[in-house]
Length: 351
Image: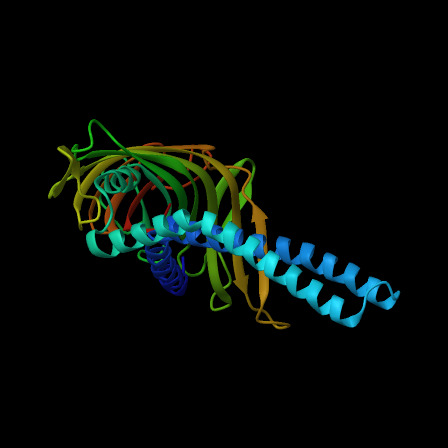
């Protein structure tokens, strides 16, 4: 995976995080705003309805005047009486809604002076502690063998070290385990994972006789060479808050999820491969932009299972992901077949 792709993903994530924070701030006054809008709509409806009735009566009087049934003086007197009557009706109906307006005013003053009630704060805290959201994770990817499964700095002959990577988009749910003061949270969800393996220069992946292998390519003409794979991924992990802060509302204790938290997590993930392809670009005498693409038919396992460890502060977590099932199977002629990732997880949009 190219470095500019990772950088673009990071910038996109921070943009979404900023948008999410703004949305959360706007949501705080939503209920009061709805009440004010409902009151204004009701008053407009009263005025519009009575005005329509008044205009109908005035039109009738105007018709009687044109037909010669009443004099100009009578028309003015009747019009004045109708206008006064409807003015009184409108004022009477608006006064009937006065209690609603006073309630809104009292609520607005109360919120300005005292803030939210204990019940409102408890409701907000429960929503924060059990939520859903969208996250992006990016990581550097390497291949290891069974003799050294956690040797991330192993330099396999099949890959360019430091150039291969993985990006994952997940929709996840977070649920507090235990009571509202518990520091333990369960995260689960559904995501899309895309891995990109950059092949060492002057080599490309090829397929033949039911095998996946690498072959040399014409020197100095190969621009890049990759093998890509995509998975539907299901993550499941437990997280512990190491520095919990608490608040108390009406004698009920809550862990304060608005405070910056230090968390550690351990979990597992499973996946199903939905795609895989060989891709490389090369030049020849005709053009510098020849692109070769081929679907991977052999050499890759259809399923994925692994474990994950993470440590995070605030909305950013560092993680290590170890694939317990090999990425490549016995049909791949390779010495290193097991995936290992080190990366960063960015929590951005929370609902």
